[in-house]
Length: 208
Image (cartoon, rainbow, N blue to C red; front, top):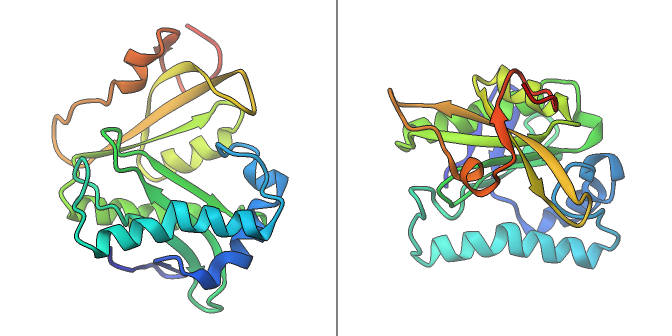
């Protein structure tokens, strides 16, 4: 995985030195509200998250384990400010058939366009790697995330309700996709798995 740079940001591999910044970010209830895990309460647990979600992927990639579904195992970046070198979040691309993008930023970096800037860099990387598309989903109760996706060129394709624990028994998700090659197929995995679904008219919870 190569480092990526934008006007204000550098996307690079996470390191053990990022654990304190990761802990501070993921111990913020506002940051983790729409992430698929509870607020991190100890630094030791942050170390575990860092190792399982990032460092282990890097080790496996460096040992020669190849891409899955065309996505390198180490397609997971820390996002830092170029000027200060401060860790402000992360972006990941899933090694699965959905090619799903996940991201989070510390609360102090919200509203500054950093998520859009980081995602656009990752989209350029994905296109250069030959991926046909990327997807991203968001809880419809988090429309700001959908606005970020659309600002980066993604379009809402469909909405589905999923049983999603531990935070909520049922979540209504909006699935976005960005296509890098002509006539690429829309990802249907969530649509096929969850029968309570409908075509997106924007990202409203309301069914047509």
